[in-house]
Length: 330
View 1 (cartoon, rainbow, N blue to C red):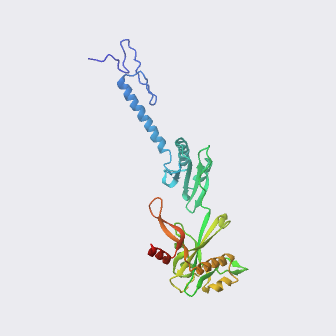
View 2 (cartoon, rainbow, N blue to C red):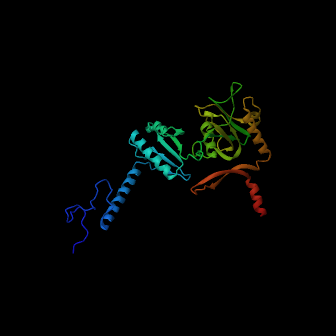
View 3 (cartoon, rainbow, N blue to C red):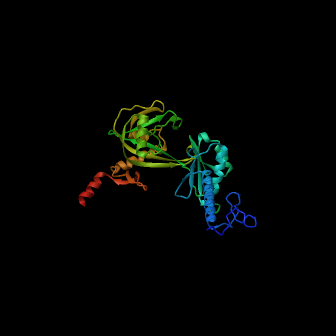
């Protein structure tokens, strides 16, 4: 038995086409369709919507979202074919990020893609920091919240070794291109800047060995100094480590060191070519020695918050003998 409903696109008894004629404009179809056709149309519209969403996603950066409500895009990991493609994806991404309520956006642009920098600047991004292989540019999206993105690191970390041998001699150096006192090279402690990911004791050991050839053992932190307006206008924290030598033969670095020697502690304290900072460091050591170094600023490994490794926490620790006494009493 044939259906009483006229078929879409067929002529009726009067020779007129019925109202269910499908409109051929994109995914828009007439609403006067039979139930079966309506289901088909809905499925087609759904597919068109999904196709459009997939196309929009392909035009946006993926990026790496952080726990602070932001995202960082590493351009070398994205499909940026050229400047025009980068700008197109950046525009689409900014719209999507604003709709998602994201806040701080970072663009890590590699050196070989440096032509992207002026494009990012045109769209409101500013410089955050740079390294030899990339520049990071940022933009804060919310208009009703102050920019909460943290500034880049503003401190150097310097470390020196206060190395004392059994003869009460301190290991000191004169640099070829370093500090002077009254126009003469200053006698100072071996040391230098910490490398990325390097703990303070390791920096002290490495720097002492590189400059003097002496292998050492870290005992404790003796003191530290903070100063401002250091290199490139940044601040500097300088840690002094109390250390014991494991070797005694000096093999000074010829590229950096003018002179290196073991010097009597009293002679060093009274030497005219010693800075006020180093005189104070000697004072700190002598005061600690008067107390037999009973309390030292030692390093203790403590599990980090991600539980993926340990960080060193520096705190005042009693000597091992003190701990043994407490254990026996308890």
